Image 1 (cartoon, rainbow, N blue to C red):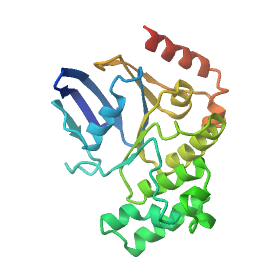
Image 2 (cartoon, rainbow, N blue to C red):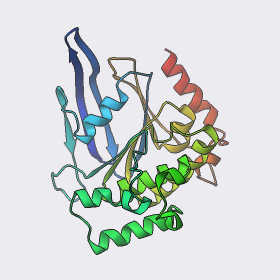
Image 3 (cartoon, helix red, strand yellow):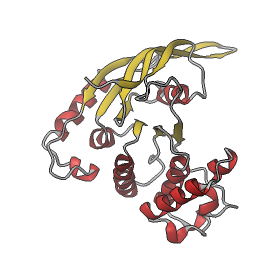
Amino acid sequence: MEKNILELKNISYSYHSLHGETKALDRVTFGVHEGEFVAVVGPSGCGKSTLLSIIAGLLPAEDGTILVNNPDGSLHYPRVGYMLQRDHLFEWRSIYKNVILGLEINHMLTPERLEYVEKLLRDYDLEKFRDKRPSELSGGMKQRAALIRTLALEPQLLLLDEPFSALDYQTRLMVSADICRLIRRTGKTVILITHDLSEAVSLADRIVVLSGRPATVKKEIPIHLSLQDDSPLAARNAPEFASYFNQLWEELKS
């Protein structure tokens, strides 16, 4: 039996204002295995991004705990990389200067880290655009740059908050497939927030379905697609794809 490296147990959170309390999460519980790609889906406004912010340590849970089971037996919290919906690249910096920004802030501009950045630029086909400004790149290329900036810090846990939602549909298909193929190659543990059910089925090893606000875990659906080509684009042609999609749709409707 696989062991969870991260376990959320009864995570609850409410937003407070002068008009009262709005409960966003209600006893959310699930785990993530090392190297697993987990997608989280749910109705709009149910608290998916709030949940990701709690996992990232940007918000404190009001109730519940997050347990860590590192493979080496240590108790430190995993290094987290958080990729948002927008690329948030700075126009006054070149692409290279943008992707090393996190290393600069964390005083980690070591030769080894910079060598890793060079490898990422090559892997993501951005090496020849390193001196360009963000406005000179397409939306998909800017998202690649944003991901390199995130991966440069070598996170153990990668959080993706609808990172392809700002792209047009055709670009989104190509970029999500390409980026997630490269992410899988690194063996990173990933939690993806998405509204796109097809994207969830084609990318994830397991899908966590949240209810409407306040969000609870309605169901967890392991994804097993019989494919010779395991690319995310090919996954949409798998014989099981439609069944998983319909199952997700019924869960969200009910």
